[in-house]
Image 1 (tube, helix red, strand yellow):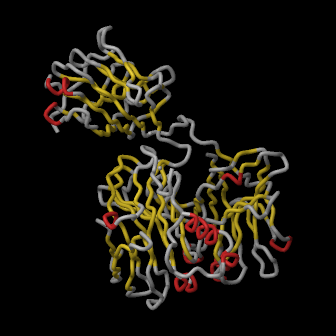
Image 2 (cartoon, helix red, strand yellow; image 1 turned 180 degrees about the horizontal axis):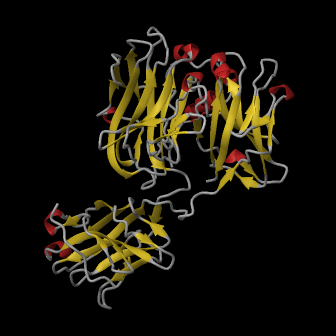
Image 3 (cartoon, one colour; image 1 turned 45 degrees about the vertical axis):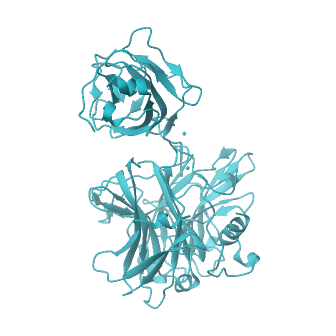
Length: 547
């Protein structure tokens, strides 16, 4: 564990301080990730020590550490479109990683390494990440890009922005997942842009519902076929993004109720994190009241429950329900209906209930019932041991954001960079004579930016494109320049002159908690990589989204 941590710190911060380049060798696993049948019926009348990482349920949808060879089952490779590249996959038992060894066929190949996961009902607003180990040949060549890949049950796929490989372990990730409309619009100057949400690209009609596939797309992007070698994958994680949900309902929550039952049927808690009741008639309910304002349209909740032997002997059934607790008491009755023949005493039953019914919007003062009701002639006990509501737990107003002004407050790192405010945004001209080629916006404390993410929308002209430089969005403390985050990187090959590029940058760490007025950050863009500083970069918008 300590060795893994030291290697991770060397990779992320200063390779030279750790003895130079990291060779592909033993004990170099990435840092351990610590972010976690019968027919239906209608309703009643209505009135989540040691070195081994264990993801905390239910906040983590999927976690694949490749600790065992069984974790590699179902993983495969494929070419995108007409590509002829192949890859041999194997389990590296020394490193406990999935090893992919590509055989590249051309300098335009796009090769995907992917695996199936247990279907996730809705990943909107959630996060996904995979660690990829890259060897020196790929990094020296500098062309290959890496994209996180997600697929859904309809066979549609989406890929993240491109990650340029660094030597060693690379965290490929997406936060605050959102699928775009796929619609292309044209601005007044004839420039086209397509709405792909937080993705670089996705299939027409792609949504984040029923996600069942995850992987990495490796794009040769001009890389010569002889540049090859193993690529390692590890710590595949699909999880709700920090601070955004889902709502985990605990047993001591005051929102639990028994409803549509006689007075002797009461809500009880078992002392082990569960709530239960002992129903005596059909349609009696054990539910959690989700207070408005709340919007469950296109959303879901996950529930785990058990029954005792007396309930099974009564030949009763359990129906998972979602129902208005207002108005017409409309219900979603298409969720799981589990008859006694399918139940085993004390054995947990896991179920997910979702709705597309536009009636499931509760205003202030209203609430929605989520839970179970019983059918037939019940006896015995029904216990709910876990519930998760897949919405933003922070409420309907959304996360707090900081919108940078497009009319003032910007500065450049050298006077020769020629800062200008234009109708499109804030423009500057990178110069080969400047030590740093940066355009930044200042945010001062006190303000807690730990866990925040940021998005920069920008364009470049043809001169910049011809110069070959990359654009790197970044954030850096101004009271301590040693604290910075450079995880965003947009290669020159991803840019088209005159077209907007949206760089969505992952959450930053606790070092960005600005506790005093003297503390501050600069956030913006700089040029990076090989090439010549020339042309113009225009920033159209900058948004910092707080945790």
